[in-house]
Amino acid sequence: MARGHPDGVIVLKHPIFSREARRLASFASRNRLPMVAPYTRIAEAGALVAYEPDILFPFRRAAIYVDRILKGATPATLPVEEGTRFRLVVN
Image 1 (cartoon, one colour):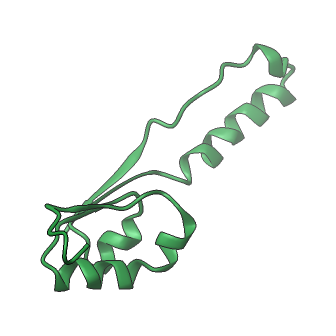
Image 2 (cartoon, helix red, strand yellow):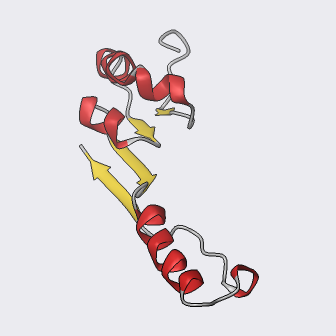
Image 3 (cartoon, rainbow, N blue to C red):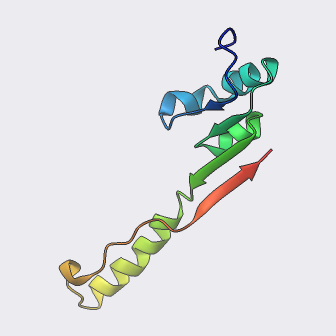
């Protein structure tokens, strides 16, 4: 990558990249490459931007579904929800 002179780096969403956040950020910094990542951990380590879903939001919403089911709602009639909250970190 350093020899190819890319304009920037986009980190893919994979656990190995999350574990190697410091090394990725260090590499991008040494080579003066802006980096966009799917984990805020990488931005906190030095990437330019990170954008990830709020991983706690679905668990909070699950409590509402449990409450509805315990009050008699049929699980099949409850709507399916997608994540609507995201975290943006700009370094």
